[in-house]
Length: 288
Image 1 (spheres, rainbow, N blue to C red):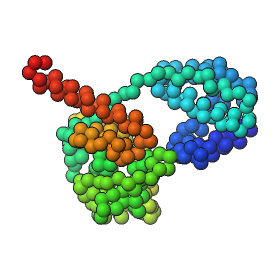
Image 2: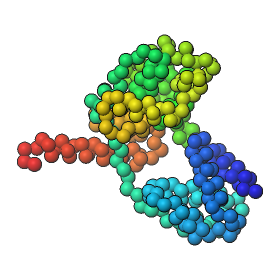
Image 3: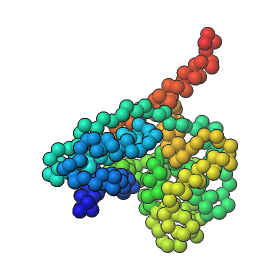
Image 4: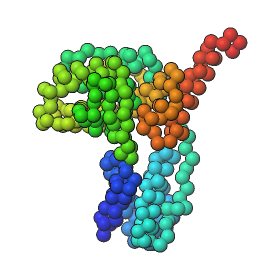
């Protein structure tokens, strides 16, 4: 019986909310966990049952708890809308206050070091193109994985990306990224494209690269270069935005490049710049 409602939830998230396949699957997994935990019929579930489920997770962050609450609210909203339940038990759930973490960013010297390595094989040509592209464009890792050859314009130095909510955006690329892409796509990718894939970045089997592979590539390269920060693909996205802002880019341009729906999401980078300015002031001002 639950499968029918999970299918409704799946369709609601993917068709109405335009969530990515990765997000939809994570929402479905969370609801399956809840339904396994709580065996009551939907109309008998109360806010106390939902709180009991949330409290069964020990030592989770406020952000994780908020995310779980958001998923439960979406699910029970749909059940109410479809008249499967009479009252929505998720309405009374209190979302914990969370502080926005200022993301780690790399200095220009660290970026230069991270991206400086010799290309000898199809795989390190691919990895160099990935790192250059992430820093040049601020792509999300999911956007990078799903990037197809047809959406890369090496001549006009542009890529076309399908972002969150299936919203398309055009992103310009810098010379270093274009050069790395040309080397990989023209000289090396044909030898590993054994399955005639449309995806730009391929593994040794000729299929689309995984998220884990990209995370591993970045971490290994950081270790080789002696970078102590715990970096990820998202670190390069943060660094991309922060460096643009520091060099005078308009916040709304950065919002467009990152694919943020709300400007408030982009404004976290202004805090980074303010912190940097304060640090420089404290170090330089003669009366400080």
